[in-house]
Length: 444
Image 1 (cartoon, rainbow, N blue to C red):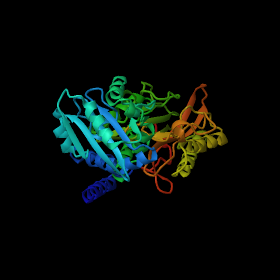
Image 2: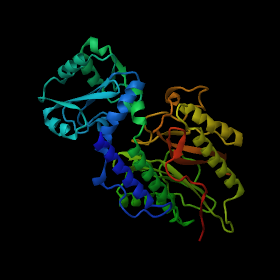
Image 3: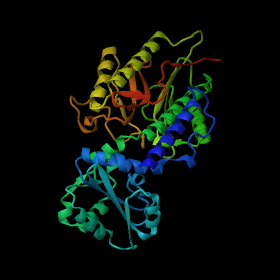
Image 4: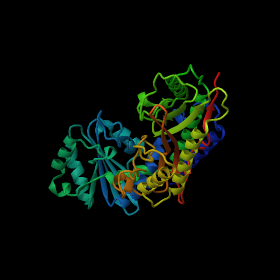
């Protein structure tokens, strides 16, 4: 435990130092996340030891089995050490009071390397071609759990067990054990949604870089010349220089839009013109693990203007005020639905058109990660589904402050300034400095 503590302390101090060297709007000039400093293996082990027992207790299960395999692997393979599985491998977890006991059953071709990662307490090596279900059945019968969580779910992250694998599992374990199966939906949400302090520090630095790169990109805009796609290309170039990857589908990251609302989209060939409100929705992936999702907005000044028109400033302020209200509402123990309702009430008060999007979503290993959905209040008068999940300390979110209006051309435009926030013991805080003012772009 001492080694784990000092490992995390070193990681935190390292990233605090890096953060201090990269102020707001400064050009990022060095590789911020070198591969040789990737702390994932230690963090992964710590997550299993520290967070998985809590998640199992909260979801009321005392065992969990994850099946890994080659090519079409479980979405959670990387989180448990099964990413290099060739033949079928099984990872079993048993709740023992406030601790978890982990056992991996692996074909001999990968077993030695798996044991060296130290991600499981015990690695049992089996001959290739051996019926793995016999060994898994022996372990489960010895441990005799009350409930066995399996990755079969309507929730994609917890739905890694294929139809064929599930049939083999039921057949191999027999009726008595199979009757103990429950979906891992709640377990996966509880476990993945909470991030360790070392992970939060990494995400904070990544969020700051994501924001700074957008400020950089807006400085390249020449009204009447620069296209939305040119801004996107600039950000792609900077990502390559910094050694980071796309936070979501590469074709839609970043989404730069100086025209009417397009939703999730790619940047088009539209030329940026005076009077445009520009939206950039952008995310990066660092260490090939953690992702960000941040939006920054700019206004292109018309000839003679020194600031955005009063109407645009009003829309902007409404959006920012809604964003701050949402942050103030976020605290442990409330539902995602309640957070979303704070936004909806404010939008109704200031006359915003409705938007189809929820206020926010968990962020971390995916752009839309596991955990409570900050949504639902526009569709239901009570929390349902993921909007009924409770906020907990250590959960991280990307969320918007909305204001939508109808333009002169009978289209719509939405300011949806998006920030990242982390839930604390007493409330929530931003993960990087939020955008306070519209970025103003001058003409020639």
